[in-house]
Image (cartoon, one colour):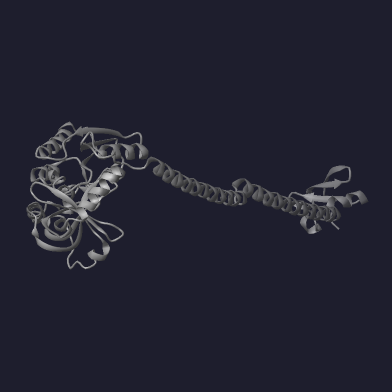
Length: 398
């Protein structure tokens, strides 16, 4: 016999009333280990409480969380005072915590801290061992689940940022006992083939148990030995694993890893265009400046041109030549005048001119006779007349 038909909401409301009215479920003290801890921006605390076999979701509202005297972390063992109630919307139940007390640290967390300390003290986390992530990879290797959200996020981000980058997926388990060995094989594959420029290893968020594969010491050492840079992208921003510390770079999420691994082509194109514009302006400025210098040099050259100097010197030579011509002509004229004067004077004093007046010149064997004392009787003399010469013999002196 069945009662009347009920809606899903009716069933959930009924269960909520049953649970809320149960004295034991309203006054629980539950011991367990904290995992998947989240501090909401509202101040509410969300986490899971687990033991070896089971887990239950928990919430502690801000008003009660404010009273805590310690900082909650994954791996802590605690005892919570809470009531159990049902969330009508999705039919799930959770513990509404009023008080939380520490009850030691979980075994997995202790193991995690022990390995972390060992590797840290061994220098495996030191920055000097970190390899640089290539700025412009052509191929990105991804080690993760082929069906998980992580690979879809990585592909989406890489395709959005740079569609020319190839993605090579090495499908691997990311949870469970076989996961560490699967992840390790992926690292060995890429290092052997040398077919990628950078490796992204990771998965989406989860509890410490779900992320435990990434706390493997063997996996950590394989990452350390990798010749190819490794980006760890395990869980959410608040999740940390050994893989995060030993990798060359840790990304908060798989999407963030894709953004780190692959440059944004559009941004780089804008940057190149920006620098190209600056370079072009600088080149134009340099060319214009050199043109200006060239024009000035050309003007200086024109002013000091050999042709102009030669032309200028030629003008000076022409002027000097003109001066010389005038000087020579002047000197010639003066000389001609002097010659004319001397010629006139010579003519005036020319002894032959007297012959025109009827005089004669008497010459002996020693030249012109100036005195009778220079002549002897019977001397032969030459008498020069206007129109000829006479030879005479001296017969008498008086």
